[in-house]
Length: 230
Ligand SMILES: [Ca+2]
Ligand SMILES: [Ca+2]
Image 1: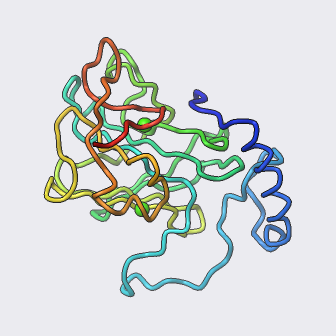
Image 2: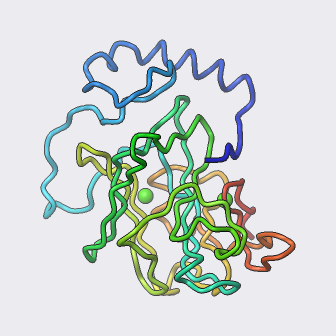
């Protein structure tokens, strides 16, 4: 996994402070799936009452935010060039090992790295897609490859669920009615709206404007800050 963006030193100072402040509640959480790094977050959410599926939208309790979605690449085929980007909003590391990627049509994939982990430091991105070969996927650095999952060009959803079943984030886009829908341009979350509730609002998304690279004219910012929306 490549390191995509580091926060300023002051943020790490704030992170250390935040860890101190969170020490008491963290003691009540289940054992973290951690490699012992002092900034590792527990991989499980704090216990909470079960939420019945029929009661309405599931609560989104995460700080790992879906920030960009390339559902319809033009420079390469969809079968090689679909991906989405997530961003760690927490002041500590998170390991996505064991998290589930799914939609609401039955597609589901559990992130499994064989123990090496899919770790995001504070403020870092990961790009999760269907092909990790830059020679085939349009030169994208993909950090993790899914199977049994895809991004529909019409209406579709991405749900990120922790190993304990709690929903971290969900984004449900439509077929261009309210959401951006431009072939070859990613859905890009507006800077300033980077949380799991703000990314439910299609008004906080736009079609990316920056070319991916000199060799891939599709417009997206995989693994880096998003474009400013018009
Ligand atoms: Ca969301
Ligand atoms: Ca981006």
